[in-house]
Length: 101
Image 1 (cartoon, rainbow, N blue to C red):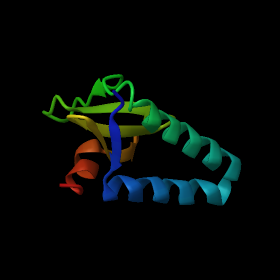
Image 2: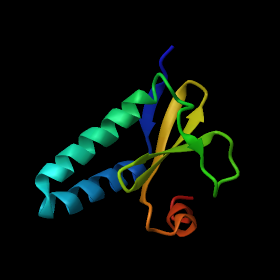
Image 3: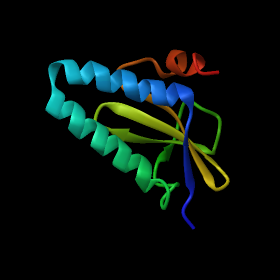
Image 4: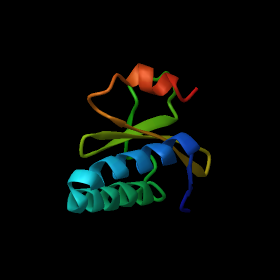
């Protein structure tokens, strides 16, 4: 059975901010990135365990998939996949994650 996808407000804000940043200088790249990211999120419905566990988190339900230079962080909550964050790989994960708690 396919899981339900739920975006947290911080993750939705991440997506919007990243897209707005990219579209200013590279509209075609921004479009491709957004399509890749949304396709990846959609794939989690059927394959929620495809990502690796997030090494910085002590939570076996939280996983991540890399999309270009970004870490797409999500948590498996029963039959719900919660998209928690989209964090650039160059950023310090702990400080970026702490702002969400």
